[in-house]
Amino acid sequence: MELRYLAAMVAVVEEGSFGRAATRLGYTQSTVSQQIAALEKAVGGPVFDRPGGPKPVRITPLGTLVLVQGRELLYKAAALADAMDRFHAGAGRIDIGIFQSMSNAILPIVVRRLLDERPGCDIRLTEEVPGQLPTLGDLDLLFYDGVLDGDVEHLKLFQDPYVLVARPGSFPEGPVRVDQLDDASLVAYPLVCDQPRMEQALARGGANPRVVFRCGGDDTLLSMVRAGLGSAVLPSLVVHAADVEHDERLRTHELRPKLPSREIFLLWRAGRTHSPLAARTIEIAVEAARELTAEI
Image (tube, rainbow, N blue to C red; front, side, top):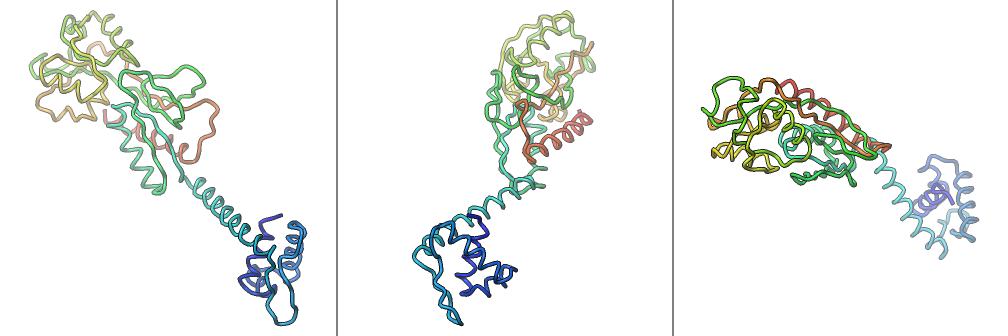
């Protein structure tokens, strides 16, 4: 049984004759007759009584059953075709994992542009738990400051330099030597992601600071710096997102020598075929990363 046979049957029922159904469908009357005959062969009996002459055709009990189920099939087929059209046009759902400093900076750019281009898309966001290694799970894409083991592909978006954030007067204006942080009080991220590598770089530079507080929240760390608990070595993206430059209670200092930058990646499961929406999200993320790199 083919859907076009069911479509021909529906047209005959709604138009009342084979001739008018043929006109509606753009077929010849003989073509419609052949399609109905093929349908009757498939279902094992007549679906119409044909009185002949000007009298309208009448649907049979078997035809009524086929009509009810056939209309449902045609509706589902049309819904599937529409869903496929919207999918290829960039609609559908995308699940994105994010960590905090990305959600404050690059994420609003990505989401806004996606919604502007594809108003019907369904964007689901999951912020990773601070202090824990993330997992891809069912995510389509994951923004992360590192790469993950296993069958994971990644695309490097940009490098995010580290800077020192302190209260005014804690250090002289201008760049601060790394060894000046030796025995200084610091607030810091938990020892996951890029944090261990950064602290090892501090040690190589002659700084063994006293970490007095660890927390995965950007806002909390900056609040502790404002309160005077300690300074913080943070990625520039965090400082940019928090608009620290315009905060009179905080000062930003470059470090000398510079520490190795944090690297920001976009990750997804290896071998996965991206939906058009996911593919466009990657393109927008690359564009947004390029713009942010110019700003910071």
